[in-house]
Image (cartoon, rainbow, N blue to C red):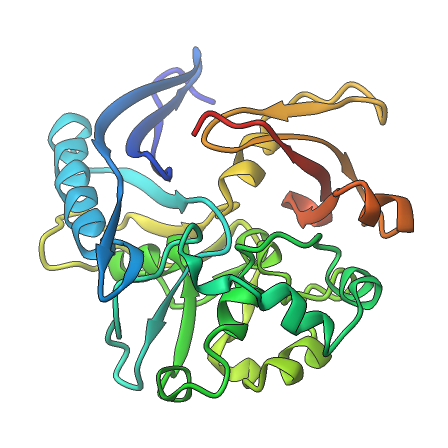
Length: 303
């Protein structure tokens, strides 16, 4: 990189307890990170469910992005958004948010694992999706809504970081790493598993296409933002996937621990690990950057 050139980008890191906006600057001297904005994120109670106030989150993000523009000026090259997994926004045929997204800690999934196992075995589900059984998985959230009028009226489902990016100006698509947390994605093909989707009674059309991390989705286009030419990029939209990209793995025996609201212990692999032992020991296979897999296990977290 020439001494006179710099590259500026923004990261919106959505966490279950707080959201922060970081400015990254790349120059001939290296990479610098600066926290621009941070705000608390909490689950709210509405209409008998625990939910994320995604409209408030988006409002705060826009405030933070405007502060970033004030600090960095024009010429911010790109913006990406990551977040926790499994939770999603439901949109109607006009693209309007139908309701505040229900949070993974909501009790609507009670009994759904048993209901699912009456439709497909634990072993087949794991072989298909690579994802272990957690009661908050998107699979069980959607199963709790099966045959409901609300799900029937849903035109599109977007995972939360993908929804936020679409509201900032990106194409409305689901990114691979966040999609893999759902237990709906086929572990081998990287597309929605047709048998799992059929058992849920939904069409893959409402999930839409799955894009690879690093895909350019458009440019910022929001009435409250002046960011000409800033590209919206589908980064590794699952926060753990984004964190693991930065790990300097030395060899195949390297192990990572990701700490936060959730703490995760795992390895990076070029293939999913779908053995019976992996299933029984609670390991799961999420997608990473460059065709990789993260074989990991949830351990004690900070929340």
